[in-house]
Length: 178
Image 1 (cartoon, rainbow, N blue to C red):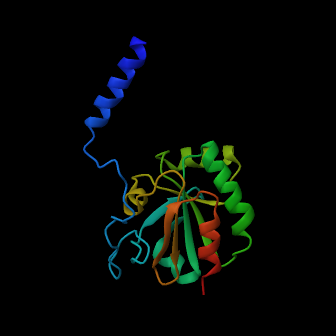
Image 2 (cartoon, one colour; image 1 turned 120 degrees about the vertical axis):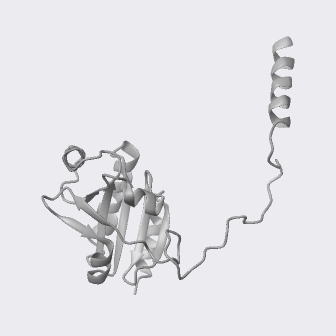
Image 3 (cartoon, helix red, strand yellow; image 1 turned 135 degrees about the vertical axis):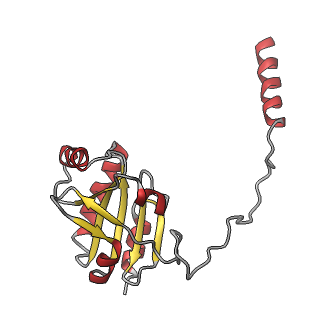
């Protein structure tokens, strides 16, 4: 009985220390996204970048890819089981169905082209292009971490920036491309 009372008191003390209101509101308190400026939020102009890839001596820029494709999809991977599930779904569901969309896996964890290439091949994604974010520039520009998926349209506007989840949002965005 003492243990139950002690735990109840502990929970009460912890809750009383909270600075946040424990009664959630239905108000969206995120800041309004300012369109027309460079940024990583939906509706903003996507920041350009240059990145090397696991393909020997290849570099890519976002600008050049958006000039030659309807959109660019960036999927941030750590080569973990969750990422593998997402990437398998991405490859099976979207890559072949959208031939004029450029799909990139972004390795932001390995720190070198050689290590990223090893992870790519060991994971079975030798058929996809992997951008190696050696200095974590792309990660920083897009707040990209495990599973984050970015879609930039041919006009350079961010159309999606969120976790992959089940891929349905990606399918919706790709289906709405002009």
